Length: 283
Ligand SMILES: NC(=O)c1ccc[n+]([C@@H]2O[C@H](COP(=O)([O-])OP(=O)(O)OC[C@H]3O[C@@H](n4cnc5c(N)ncnc54)[C@H](O)[C@@H]3O)[C@@H](O)[C@H]2O)c1
Image (cartoon, rainbow, N blue to C red; front, side, top):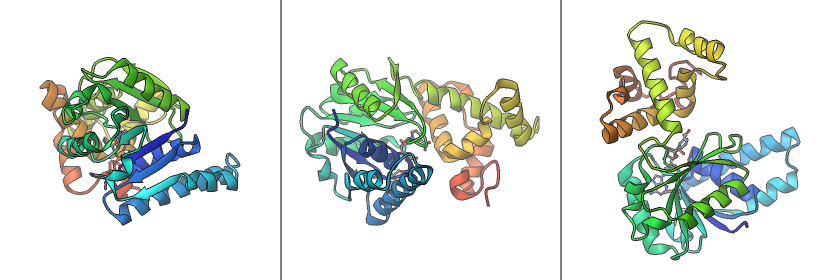
């Protein structure tokens, strides 16, 4: 069923989604705001594909064909003929709503408009359009080429047909889907990991336990492959801080109040692996 996909945002997630779709035969346009951002996305895709080739999972020809299927662009108009659009821009409601407002004007009436948000209710994003029934959450996981899960999220007005198209797309690019029937803030996976990380940071900042020991306890005690603080470093401390703020704003549930330490780390640019320092040092 491969068709035409437009990915909006060529960051960590957008480039990964563009890659797996192109590998599965989709014709992909990958849009970001400026040329350097688009180039960074393409470089990430090339690096990932080369790694698969070095392992023998892909041939050099498959790498070349996959790259050929991806057209980088700074023009949102490239989404006009897409069957599915997946938005993966910053985790901010105003930025996402602006993108969806424009997509609503540009795209065909039968185009499915998906968002890769990790915590913002789909219904709020869909409200920027005149076609909320065509808007759905497709929450992929990082790194997209490796992680098998796609959390499909229904907004209040998402139609069965839209959900089925999104599921077909996600399965065709190799993912296993779970369906979240109501778009509660944080859905299911982000809600669980955010609660877990926030509680872990509170224990560390109040001196109850060191970051290393807390992660060791979760790995050896629960069999988790990675502790919550190492996970926060991988995901981005800023991403989880945004998630905690969004969930707290939506639910007023005190357990999602962002700990002071997380707020100060983000202010200091200690965002995790991507800046070389988070709860651990990667320099
Ligand atoms: N990082 C993760 O592990 C993860 C996992 C699941 C979901 N998500 C969600 O995916 C989305 C993207 O996250 P990310 O980690 O890829 O972020 P990122 O910061 O790596 O990339 C975001 C990209 O969007 C671009 N952008 C911003 N406004 C744009 C616009 N109007 N049009 C086109 N491009 C625009 C930015 O220039 C940037 O390149 C967020 O909603 C995030 O919550 C992230």
